[in-house]
Image 1 (tube, rainbow, N blue to C red):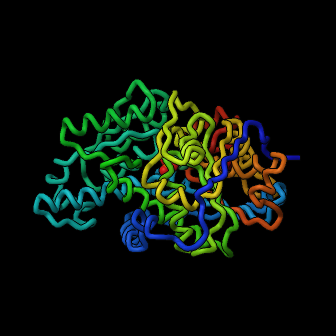
Image 2 (image 1 turned 90 degrees about the horizontal axis):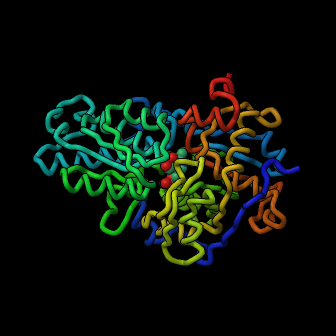
Image 3 (image 1 turned 180 degrees about the vertical axis):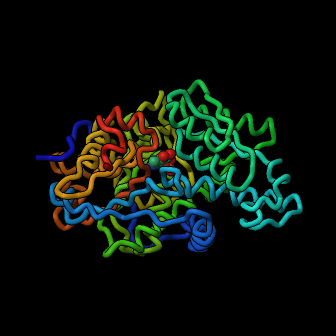
Length: 402
Ligand SMILES: Cc1ncc(COP(=O)(O)O)c(C=O)c1O
């Protein structure tokens, strides 16, 4: 019996995937030096701690896999998701660069101690978000002392908006989808002299999203260092692709030409990476991008992310919302002696893609999945929206983890 239904699962192989070591095209986006700098910076912030890597032995056995490792990001800096690493790191870099332009050479300690409080308060950072990235930018702005305005789209829940406002940011709701919120943030920033800290890149806007992704490589490196042996497969959920690209680049640096099989998984109404792989060039997905996987509700890829995924990701999958809910419930139940825990909607998409593939005729063979497989997934958020979580799973996160 399969753990997750293969209903509506779709697969797109990537014709551009290549073997061999990471190349200059990828290192022009994320470099080993950039990783060293991000790790040194982020690991010095107050509250830094590695997140746990779970060995889900019960789930692996039930699924017929050798290993399932799950990097659980719920506790990251008290923000609930891996996004804490990216937006806040980009805010830190941006503030230092802008202060330098204004004649102040500030260290991180100068920022957190308020040494240049007045000068920093004169800088406003802004971003569009589906929740987690905005929370990270707002938290970074508060930590380092800048002003912050965050744009959310029509379907972002009140709980997510409140979580951003809790860090002192002004929250503006836009009557449209994520990509429209991005455009509104851009327009208002240009008018007001604010600084956009976006997690997605587009022509003419590369530096900040590169820093965001470089921040994510810290999560990836923690996982690879904690693994007892290399994974054979890494299943990565995709929004704009920044997280998937960061984990992939770091894996390529770590494992060299023996890069594990990289599989990118997206929700059915927001599969811009899947459609891009299919077309062979960046494709935007329209509509309201509606999915319970709020963090993945993105219609346009990040161009920087594609520089990495284009040659490294061998497969792209689409899963329906029902697959994500099924996996949240599996993890909340704790299969075969695994300790139950609360994983957010967007966190489980990678694992949902893996488990749904095992139920689709011929797909396990296509992806090379079987009892010898060692699968790594990044559980990128805890129950960041407890109300939605409770509705979907039928128990509160606290009840699940009691
Ligand atoms: C929990 C979670 N996982 C994954 C992602 C996807 O990241 P990216 O947009 O970089 O692909 C997001 C994005 O917001 C997220 O919030």
